[in-house]
Figure (tube, rainbow, N blue to C red):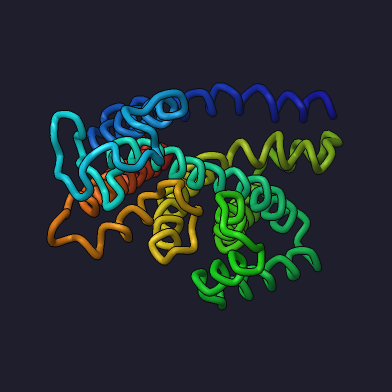
Length: 297
């Protein structure tokens, strides 16, 4: 009986899952906006990696150009109030934005997925505690929590920004995974795995999580631009990464006072931020449509 149940679990599911993922990949490639977003993000990652070893001018180098000078052949995005090359700083700013966006989602996945799986599978008192904390965090404004954490954690830094954003957004992933687990825990393949003597850890991470992976990926994809925008807003307020590290938000804040004489100081980081947010959103929309089984023909 155990061997039969194990066969029911393993053999039929694997080809079906492979078909779902291959079909999702085909539909994703047909989504032009999602494909354009993926291409732009790949380009942005290359720019961020190149900036690790080379930028046209030193990121913090002052007086490399005339202060407030506009775009030119030597300085594509012009110079800021200290004569620093804006293009070089935008390149380094891409590192910060991607680090914050991806770093926060990795922490949120590491925290939200196990908690959501356990709460949805075991239910009972643990689920009640998790639901209580989720509701409490939803009742407190994100910005207030982030500001308090940034202040309490001491001197502003990239790691503190990542922690602050993760603390304010872990509930979304936890609630999503919990809901998926509640829907999947009564499915036939989970019952078969349970009847075959599989341990809860094996059921959660070997059967439930792979079948809930699509919504998790979509949620993480949408979470990256939200974290990037949150970091840019904190940096705009002066609570982000410390100077002279360039954040797109702090660069826009620096150029706000001189927007009439040097609008490029605001336009360059703002366009970079907007394109990045749109690219992640387009990719997230494409993944959501591609991974939705109801859209299969």
